[in-house]
Image 1 (cartoon, rainbow, N blue to C red):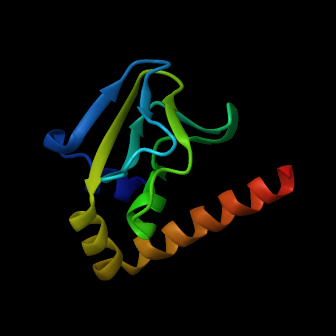
Image 2: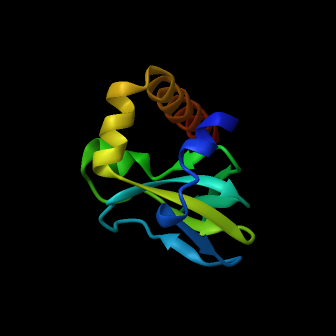
Length: 119
């Protein structure tokens, strides 16, 4: 996933979050997905951490796929730099980069499997 991080390392599309800073909250409208460049992000549902996303990982993609409100809250676990990917770039990546689309499906399946194990 190292090369994917480089694809998203455009300074104009990045943001930095302090530890504990909320990146987005459950039920918000989602216009972006995010790729972690540095740091880590906790994904929480009802106050429980369901995933920690580290460099090379992404989050927030479900809002772009479903065009529905966010299903979880994302909080910077430490000082974190992320790339913001808008809907247009996301759709371009899915259509033009099969490896990205497959990684997206793998991550979503893995998160769903881990969430089901906790229920």
